[in-house]
Length: 121
Image (cartoon, rainbow, N blue to C red; front, side, top):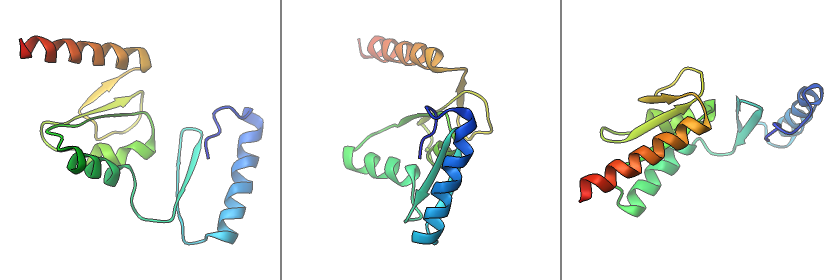
C-alpha cells in the first residue's frame, strides 16, 4: 500500500485501516514498512528471490539493482561479487554504491552505459 500521494495527515489513518483489515483477513501475512509504504506478503520471499529468479532466467552475468526503500534491502543484500547495488538516498544499506537522488542515479547509469560501450570498442 503506497501512500506517497495521500495527504500527510491522512496517511496514518489509512495505514491503520489496512492493518486492521489484514489482521482480520490475513493474520499470518508478513508486514513490512518503508517510505510511505506498508507491504504485506503471503510468502516469505521478496525482491531478493525475484532478482535471483531473473538472474537464472536471463543468464545474467551481473545485476545492477537500485532502490530507495527498506523493502529493497533484501535484494541489495543478496547481490553477488561483480553485481552493483545502489542505494538512492539516505538510510542503512547493503548497497555498494550510494547516490543522493534520482538525478544522480540517472547520471550514474548514463556514465555506466558510456563506459560499457567504450570497453566494447
